[in-house]
Image 1: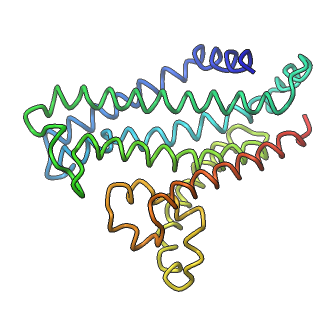
Image 2: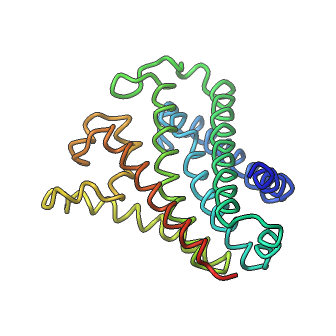
Length: 258
């Protein structure tokens, strides 16, 4: 298992796209921070942009959807899955090693975005606000950012668990990535409609789309009036649904023909 994880990590480190997307995210964050500094009326308060890591949190979602879609689909598209199976690795080991690699990859992105947002704050907004300033619901700016990171990390992996499942179904990398990104936008739109339906049928509060509101609920106590769930219930729900989608993905992968 460790050998497989090292191999997957080696592939990531030697892919030009790994460094390209990292640089792209930092450039976009920098541009957004500069625009926020020069045009706060149009781009919002710097505290709020810092909490969202200057859109870094949003871009991580897209980069990870692409990475999770391709890490499995490419093995089947180019037939390299056969080489791994010929080396007497179990399918379960191959899949779990890819999950672990993607988990490490997502942590890398969040650490990179967090560190860069701190640097941007120091360089561009050091005289505008302090990390200890009160931001929302009694949370300081840095506390709000960390709550946002935790919430988005959990919801991102809820989405990625579904993406990894779809990647096991589609043989084309492009199809897997397209379905993943389109599906993410669709889930975001439908999740807003679910609030209206949940008021009529309360049992719908346990649907996985409702768990997508976890980041907002961590930052604002009033959001639970819309989600109808407590924060611990939403955290547990996100983890349970992620585990369910992962388990289905595991079964599909083991039964899939090469």
